[in-house]
Length: 194
Image (cartoon, rainbow, N blue to C red; front, side, top):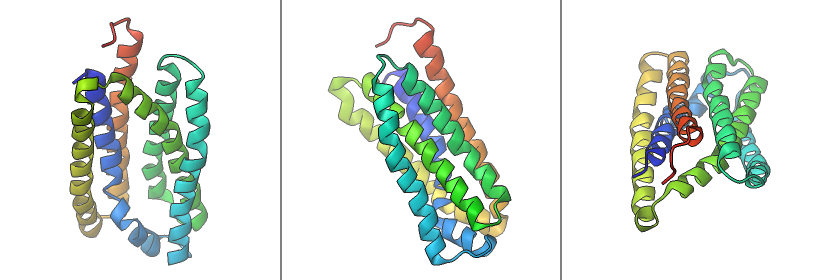
């Protein structure tokens, strides 16, 4: 397995896995901590994130495809990962529905920036004869990490606080983003690409 594939898997393990800490209990957080929260508001918040990601990722993908190489993909992957990592820290201070909606928009925009570049770079470094296996390692690793995180997130929120949980998610996401820096080093160090 190429080291770029490993770095991308570890990046997603920490970023997506850390968000797995809050996804199952996000509705509880909103109902307990956000003024005016309702089931409809929770649905709107989720819709904002998914709609933003869906609409903007096509524009990002088109823009990154206009240039050969991985430079634009890496830039959007890094910026998107930073935006996503900032969102949990924002939730520490969120008090109103508008705060949540803005954070969900940023989360969606971060995903829209990160996803196309991540997929392109991962695909470029796959070995044709091991593509299924390497995708399988990715899916298994991230799924197991997210499954473990779902339980741990509920535990942390129940026995400690949502604020602590959001700080942990933000820090783990930043750790995941740090793996992208290794990809930058590889891409622009002149090393031969496999």
